[in-house]
Length: 172
Ligand code: HEC
Image (cartoon, rainbow, N blue to C red):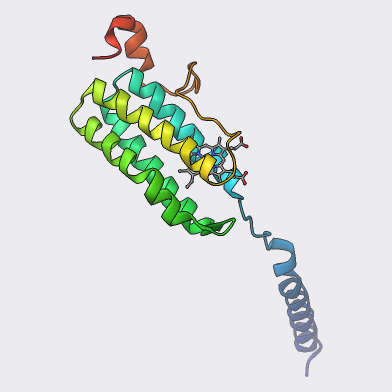
């Protein structure tokens, strides 16, 4: 073997050793710990903001957005049931469907009909259903209400239109 060839094989061997070392260590360095959000986490990050946005956009009668966001809230509950299938021996999918499915259906109907009064009634029912489930699952201290103040300042929830036209533009 010529000197240059031997040099090549030494270099190749070193490269392979380095790769094996890096490769062997890689999973430990890049593996992310699994994140298992609790039911309280999911309520705070996936359910509560959507309930608020529905309330605010509802005041502005922003029907197109409301149709979208009502679907988001419904899907969030479906994901809650998949992520936390049981809570204190209660079946989440069952609790969700017996508590809040029908109010969500009525909310959808009101949005499709673009009927402000029906929306307000259905939204109050949805809000009530949040609390019924909280009471049923041992958390009566978690009290949800119709939002009392504007928030999400970076998102136009129909609010710009309402402000432009005055409060009379909200509600029909
Ligand atoms: C299927 C039952 C169920 C429904 C329906 C439900 N929740 Fe909850 N929610 C819970 C339970 C149980 C907890 C307590 C979880 C925990 O902390 O262990 C909770 C907790 C919460 C919390 C407390 C988080 C905190 O840290 O303050 C908020 C906010 C919340 N829910 C919002 C809502 C809203 C808004 C709705 C309705 C759109 C709703 N929930 C509907 C079961 C439900």
